[in-house]
Length: 285
Image 1 (spheres, helix red, strand yellow):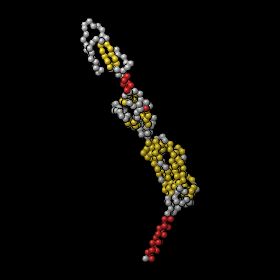
Image 2 (tube, helix red, strand yellow):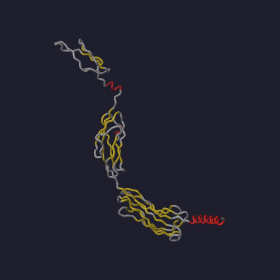
Image 3 (cartoon, rainbow, N blue to C red):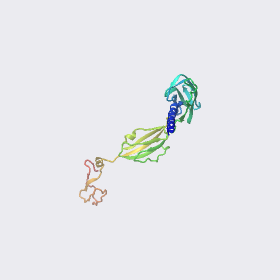
Image 4 (cartoon, one colour):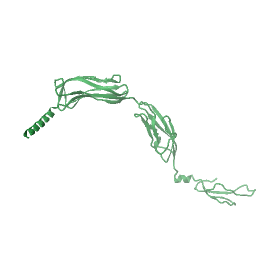
C-alpha cells in the first residue's frame, strides 16, 4: 500500500514537472483582407510569442502572392532584421497591396528562416508560418432596383426592374415611405424628396438607384393624393337647393329631385322662379 502511495506521488510530481517543461509555439502570421477591385489595403506581418520571452536573433521572411491579382505598392515582400524580443504580439512589417482582379480568394503566404536566442530553433520550440486569404470582389455595375414598393397602395403597372414609370394613389397622406432595394448589394438609393411633401393631386416622385460604379437608373412614380374634404369644404361644395318655386304655379319641391314639370297657358312667355340655395352665399341661376 505504501509503495502504491509513493508511486502515485511520484507520478503527480512528474506530471507537473512535465507541464512546466512544455514550451509553446512561436507563430509568424500575415493578415488577410476582403476588398474590391481597385482598393489599396494594408496587411500586417507579425509574430506571436509564447509564455516566456524569446529574442529573434535573426530572421528572414518572404511574403509570396499572385502578382496578376495583387500589386505590392508599399513595403517589402522580403522582411529581414534581427535582435528583437518576442513577448506577446510583435508587429514586424506592414505591406500595402492594390487589388487588380476579382477573385474569391488569393493567398498571401509567409515563409522564412529564423534564429531564436542565438539558435536555429531551440529544442522543444516550434515555429509556425501561416498563410491568409484576400478576397477581391468586382465593383457593382447594376443600377436597377430589385424591389420598389409604397405601403398601403399598389403600383401600376406591377413592378419590373426594367420599367421606369409607375402610377399610384393614396388618400389623406402627405408623406409616404418608399421601399427601394437596389440589385447591387453595394449600391444606394434616394428620392427627390417629393414623397415627404405630397400635395393634393398628382405628384412626381422620383427614385434614383445608383450602382457602386456610379451608374444610375431613374424610376418615376406619379402619385395622386386624394384628400377627404372637411366639413367646411363639403358645405362649400353643396350645390343643392332648400327651396324652389314658380310664381303662380304649383310645384312640389324635393331637394333630391332635379327635374320638374308644369303646364302653362300657351301665351305665357316668362316664368318668375325663386330658387334658394342650401349654402348661404351660393348663387342660383
